[in-house]
Amino acid sequence: MSMKSATKNRLAPLTRQFPDRQMLKDFIKLEGLRVDRRAHRLERAQDIWDLREIARRRTPKGPFDYVDGAAERELSLGRARRTYDDLVFHPQVLRDVSDVSLATTVCGSEASMPLAIAPTGFTRMMHSEGEIAGVRAAHAAGIPFSLSTMGTETIERVAEAGQDGRTWFQLYLWKEDRDTSFSLVDRAAQAGFDTLLVTVDTPVAGARHRDARNGMSFPPRLTPKTFLNASYRPEWWINFLTTAPLGFTNFGGTPSHSLATIGDMFDPSLDISELRWLRSQWNGHLIVKGIQTPEDAERAVEAGADGIVLSNHGGRQLDRAPVPLLMLPKVRQRLGEDATILIDTGIMSGADVVAAVALGADAALIGRAYLYGLMAGGAEGVERGLSIFRNEMQRTLQLMGIPDINSVGPDHVGMHWRTL
Image (tube, rainbow, N blue to C red; front, side, top):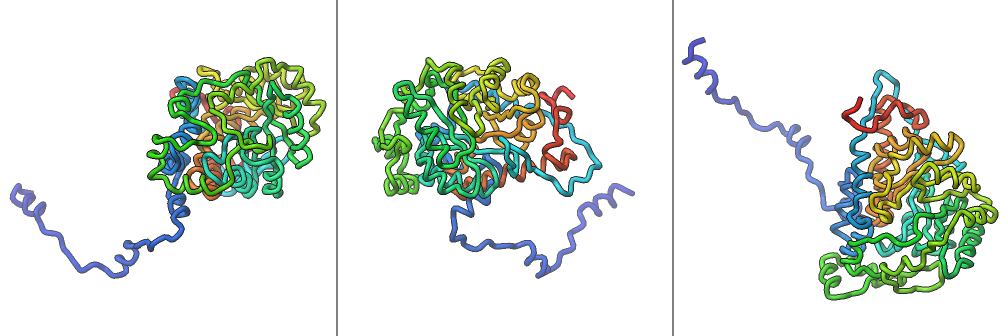
């Protein structure tokens, strides 16, 4: 072909026609005005990071940073996240994964997926629907819900709202009034809570610099700074001002404490004897939360615990603490197959949960991820978050060629993507 012919063909005009009406109808879908704005914004969230961004926009800085932050330089939290990000899955193909099961056993009973909501303090500070939204969403999803000693709803009210599922109670042992801690155990048993999580990594409070810099208090106070920050988040403040006052409701009052002084209630004298005493008093499952070494995991089980939560408190206590996921294989090897091992810290996706189960966890606890959903949209936000986790777990297993979450194991995951 000559240069002249090639140039002529290249410059030939397009053949045009009138648009096909059916094509326009198929392509142009104008969405009508949505009355339910909460549902609309939650539908647009594709992962937990999207929920986090919605939460950041809708929640004053103090409460958001309380959830989002960690201790000191926040190294423990950052390392935990990087560990999950650096994982590599080893997929297998040509397997039938048309029907995937996420059902498993957690603390002696079936759960719809290997997930539970972690205990969180000050929850109604994040959103006025608080623990009631959390327990209802968890039980609708078929997973356990954990209530914190420092929760903002009573044991009895959470039990009433969560009659259709399993509720767990997290216990701190207070140094000045230990009898009160023990009375909480009795109330939890009477209310039907089946599992006790005893937190042991808080001899003193971690240094959470974000909270100190924000002048964070419980309940929040309207200073000029907070008023300015809240001026474009009216829904949060309307809810805060028109609902029941915040307080540590399980202690019968509505105290206002600086978050910096909460640590005065923790007990640096706590030792293994207290765990043995609790075992003698509690007939349900006893799980020790805050274990960070294989040796301490073994000590806890020898003292009567049914299992442990491998946790560095979400990076909120000791900075530069061990990354729970990295410790998991060693802890599973030390405890054997019978002990329950739960894990938290840095878990932001269903793929993270699959990886944790593969490396030896029975289930994962989510705290921040749950609260991002709560701040983004109350009960509906928590439901959206749990739906995202479920969909991500199912899709991950299908892409890995594994039809059952109970079949995933160490051979299916590597600790670093550069090492195959």
